[in-house]
Length: 203
Image (cartoon, rainbow, N blue to C red):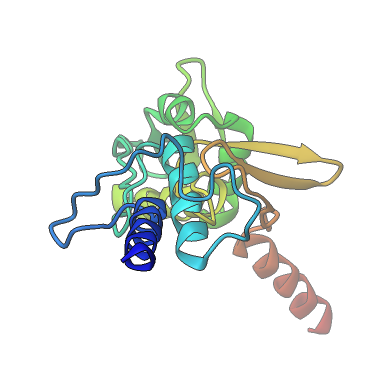
């Protein structure tokens, strides 16, 4: 009888030392104030590591939701014709401010992609040589945002474009990743001009 009583007490102590059980309805009763690994020198389990990583991500970026991509909403460019041979990008400066990018950088990209030349007038409007539709300007802006604004890792628009020597780097304020971005290449107009000169010399 004494042995049975002693065994019963051991079982009681063993049960009280067991971690709190999880129910199937998703509710967990636990007396622990911290995570499962708090106060322990044991290694993390795989599930605990995943949980910890996602908790840190949520703390750093509350807007990040698993399975959802943040949409980047941008004002459409206001494009009007100036005479018969020029186009005015009316809200060019406003879009630069919304993108948090220097007008000089966006200007260089636009002119290179469109293969033309242009300048900012006294009204802060970008006047470019040639006739261009709003859709064409939108497509160029879309490529610019993809390469030089949104983070290449988490697609967040909260980024900073930094120049280091001759290279530009995209620094994300959300996931803190940093990557180099492509340099702006000269448009097709310059290539066509060189080919024309070579043909003229050949003839």
